[in-house]
Image (cartoon, rainbow over all chains, first blue to last red; front, side, top):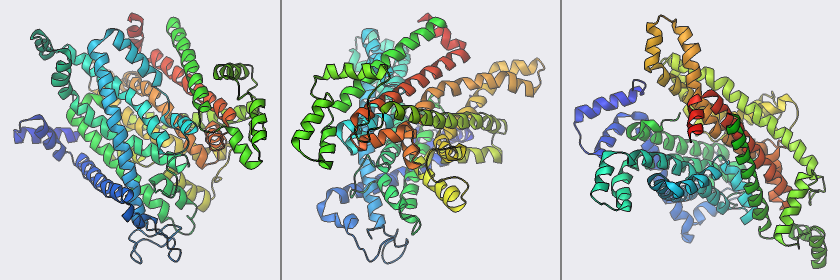
Length: 306
Length: 310
């Protein structure tokens, strides 16, 4: 197609020049040629590394003092002073460590939810697309049922059911997001089913589950990676917003949305306690989206929606 | 087409029924009912019992569901248990506010996204195109509640052009509507741009050019309409996105719409009110999805044929 963006063209040239073989190696060469996607990859790796550090200091009680200890003599200190690289909040707690811990919470939650969504969507979409018939009718009906309901609305209603906290938003994301993914996988599996190699496998008497797992799933791997990076981004934004309005993670546990909400009250003294976590979310989401866009151009330009 | 509209309508009613079950039972099994909340304010186990009896909370759940639906449909869902205000009033006021806000945001999105996307595609790879694309990527990354804080500080606190918060006239609407629109605007600009480019590369465009049609006419009469199809189809995703974000944006701006009231009532465990609001919100969502669906059908005959064939 003549409408592919320029970066894909240069990627194609790089690919031809390298003569690389193997799907993953191709993908890497293409990714290397696409500088925006590469930046996205770097940001995403950074996010995951900081997230892992955050999970450690969140879960290890001996390290809680890093993000918990208050110092009322040094409240709302500006970044870069008195040993606080990013300054402190209104209780004098170190902002850097609070943001690291909050990033850990975001990463853990978003990656967990995404893994669930991907597995459920993959299985449901595959079954519907591959077997058709009654299974397809049932699953498509289920997809249509959840389709079009705002994630945040469902999360707020769940908060009414199970109480405030992370559970509500995690449950809502799991219930809503799988449907969109199942829909994409269903369409792809339906197309793959008509291909010659599947026909050949069937002629050889390969059992259905084996055709699916061994012959079809490798072909939707690209879609899985692309959508996974989008879902992680969506979940992080929704959780942050949910915690921001006070229904998500409850203080004193740090969350990116919660830190922004707290910092907002002291804006006239120091803007940093809300600007820094806000910028952190923006960087994480920009990174994930750019990586997703790059992967999409490589694996499956048909997924290009916007 | 009429049959299709009718079928979608019946399906929408069915969805609403499922949603009402979900909303009702979901908020009924919630830990602790409203009497716990009131009891901590006043006192006494007995008082809680009487209140529970009065509110019909001791009836079996299916019976409570029927009462809920009956009251809702007859236009009298009762009073807020916390403030005592009639729920009908709250529903009416907040509903009008949310529809105003949501509609303004949707108008901003399409009024700007279509021309900007078209322009960016027209001047592909020019500095203007690159600026638009960069801003669009940024618009998709910055969380809207953070953007709201920044805009409030700049335009309301520093410059004083708009009020900080609250519902009211047009001036109160500007900031929340802009915040609400931004992410969808960014998405739609990108969608419109790639859609125009894709359309421009199709064979029939070459035929039109060979036929001697002016470039301007090709663009306005042929490319625009066809490239709008994916944009309209995507409204089915954009509209729920915008409606969902009203929950956050209304809370930030203390804009008394359905989202604000719903979050408030859930914080207060005012379930009668929360149920009614959640149901109204779901109805708005289902209805706008229904409209988006019909719009898509009208614009794209291919979809129409496909569904008729099925």
